[in-house]
Image (cartoon, rainbow, N blue to C red; front, side):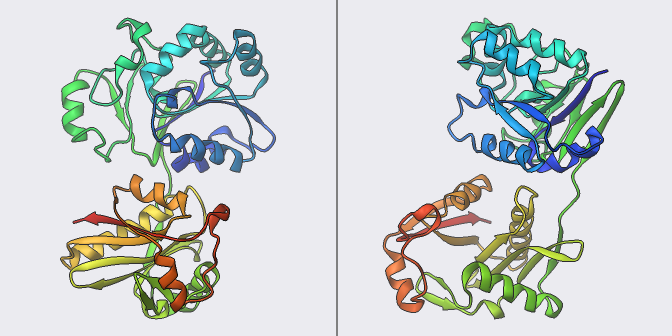
Length: 363
């Protein structure tokens, strides 16, 4: 009986997998195939998806199809409990699978009942064929010679990342390329599950966001003290008392698992602090969206923030959220340490803590 979990962005829906499987995943082995990401410049999702699988207790065995021998491929796929195929360029993925005969091998295991988990390109792979639209570039798979026949496991098509408008207006793209196809639209918070003949769209729970009020203030101040040694927070040569700032909290079972604070001045909204205390649950995104909404209500022209040069994860995160990197304030930490001597010389991963990087989101 076929069993598939087809995600748009696996990290956002990973917590739905155990329920679909029907039990604890701890100790199970999954083959992790990141091949589709090879042509991509910033394949951050490979790391987040791998981490999400590991967080579920799965033993992850990575398998790069393009370089592994046929014997190695067959052995690893046969000896693991689940198959995971990641995102990237779908055409390149299809080319490499066909080149090694892995397309037929995956079909064989799916038909035997092995769980197939996927995200983005890996999800499109199980369609009848890959649609040429405004997304992935088929030129990256010249060996296919225009034959985009895929695994034909499902009898419908998927439009993923719906609502993000990555390649222009989503609805216009659907009308242009998918109007005559049976289509299921899924956002990054959704997945299509297939259990035999049962097909469902499942959605990750929404993050509960609340404005910081007197009820949460003490807990927020404690979090900011632990995470940032606040107050004060230093931003662009200013010492800011975070205990007075407005903001939002994210709640899970009435417990705070995320905090954002902001300040509005001169038609600009600054995000002063942002903390997500649980990874890969959309908390940071939801908190930023709440501040952007407030900035729009106050007719701000932009939302901006600074982060230090060691915060490589944050730098990538803000760019994924459409913030533009607009300035590097060299040696800003020299000024900051005069206002707050406790700022260390070394930051994350022992990177020398020297500069402020400024990001903005224009409204």
